[in-house]
Amino acid sequence: MAVELNGNVRMHGDRGPGVSVKVLAEHRRLRLLSGSELVGDWMVPDIGIVALQDGFNIRAEGEEFILHTEDDVALADEIGVAAASPRLARRIAARHNPEERTTPSPAEPEPLPSNLAAIGYAVAGALVVLGGTFLNAGTFDYWVGFVVGGSVMIAAAYVMSIGVAVGRPMAWITLAVMIVVFGLAVASNDPETTQLSAYGFVAGGLVVAIGVMFSGGATRS
Image (cartoon, rainbow, N blue to C red; front, side, top):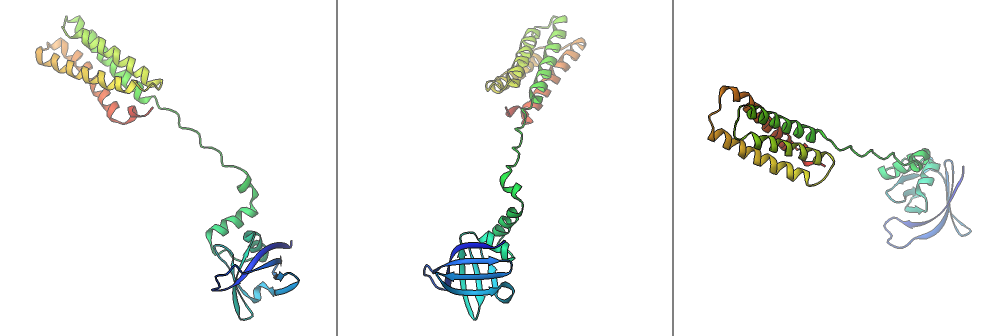
């Protein structure tokens, strides 16, 4: 299929605007017309023509000049000129694959918010509550603090799971308070053998909570 384009020609090294031409291309033949005057009529294999980033460098009949057209892709495709620039090559490829130009790429699905951190923190709170309950059976003074603190940890986990911004600060503050309470409990009491398992649950819950918070999972909404 013949291609007819508007363009301009300027001699190689010339800084001027060049001469306006009509570009006619069909298969391997290239003709340039300036008004009614024939500027050039060549078979492409007989001349040197290279596709540039913008336009074409042509060597013909001992002359070298630059040709710019309104559609370099159409001309390069019609006369079979190899695209020297990656940009032009991509445009030629897209011309032969219209779907690449017209069909938008499917949007990447938005990542679903992860609730693993909230679940882990809730499990930690449950362990602290369980440990406090065991301490209650042994009439230990700090059991109320562990039960209440563990319940607050579970509440903070729920707040994190629904994406409320205050959830993370709430989780950090509660964890810090529970670590202090645990330290005070250990320092001010000599736990009996029956209380060691309760201490283990509380300590395990705090370790899990620390791991969750420092893993980075709790820092994402």
